[in-house]
Length: 284
Image (cartoon, rainbow, N blue to C red; front, side):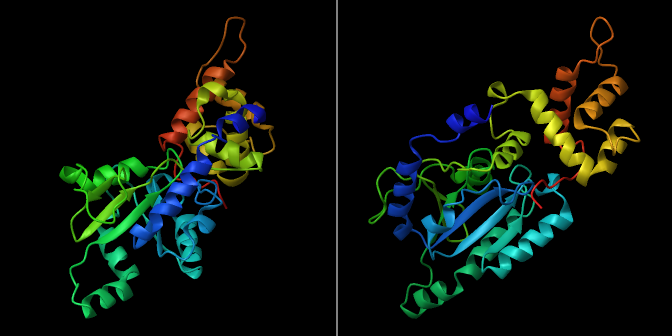
């Protein structure tokens, strides 16, 4: 399984994407990085700091409604301590995105002041949007651009082929030229990404993924499991035994009375991804 995931997550165009991003950086004033609030570290490309360099950055912790609020608040504090502005948002509903414009202007206040002193106070602020697949980059751009989803007209100094979108408030977004992919040596990062659906289920052993998720839930969020599936006394059980216990509770049986653990695994992952298991953060 790990071998398959390695193939899936090391596409050859990553080097090209890295080069294109670096070439486009001089065109923007700041970088907006989208991460999944449930995996605020594992859903980042570890090379992003080196790629972006000293460019001002804002991080959006997307799908915050599915993450542990206290863990999100702590992560935002940690990002702040490292000099990066971070906001909890939900790009599908729009929650928190009303703060984006002010956050960008606050991040670039020195740039705005310098522009004003040069008689260019109304100069458009440009922000590049980056993020690995399935963190919500497209949802963010669609939500912010709205009716202005059409490509912004070509301008001098704008690399041909880059997609620019106006979001009003004197801000334009540059969709990343190419796709950033996570690059991990730690298999646990791969499993965490599979929990949230960032690795295609078709190439995975669904039961193995479900069992690993249950191990995390048992150790960190046992109350969520107990409340959702009405199970008790599972704290000392092996994760596969917990899967069988849930299958029994849900009446998922095969002919002969065996538990349908595969069907149960699919249900468990679907319910986790939909937020029906409660607010859960997998990166601690």
